Length: 275
Image 1: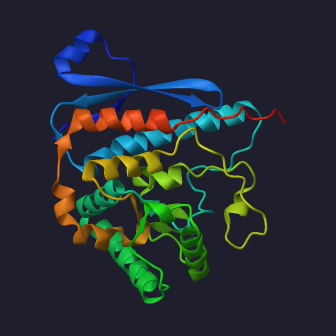
Image 2: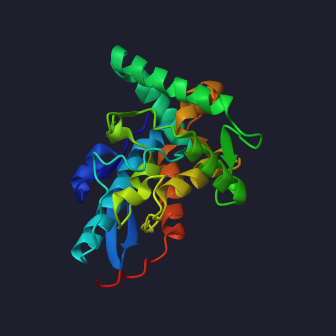
């Protein structure tokens, strides 16, 4: 399998040639300032699950750049490791993320893996037992921002279920957390993220939604609709789609197209007003 990664520093031409890798550059606007990421891709096949770690890294770096920019302008951002105020939200996963999480849970030490898998399956049963008639394990693209998607989110919030990967207020899979979690940033109190709060969270618009772009990329590769899988249902969904998880595409082509989608989707963010 090919290797896909964000390069921590600009590689030299010699390193580039020696590794046999291709370096692709992603340039985006972060609250009025340019940001540049170099992506290293070695030639070879890539599965959908192989794209997830690269996508997480890109999402994290964009979110951190946004947080730093907000902080430099005096904006208070409560989002950080250990905050679980939003961990009762309906979390959508892209197809690559669902496959990757299933693999990562299986690769964990036995006790840890059994605990998380059982927690996920228990939550799945609650969701499936109480699901409304319009419920599906995956949501088609046209429902992402529509009325049904909002209905589903409100219904899920009413269940009062915390994320199955949350324990004593801490995320047990923080380094592997979904892109949707990485992209959720607010500038008012963390309390506003609580479903019971009367205050609406002031959600920051990311320079680009890596989650949406990853969904578009997957749909293009598979020539299908964009899908969003609910986090607690990722394991049973992945088990039902094993054949899809085994398909491969040329890694360089995949990442090149991903970069194109990210740059085409991104729009310059309006400067944050000075406090």
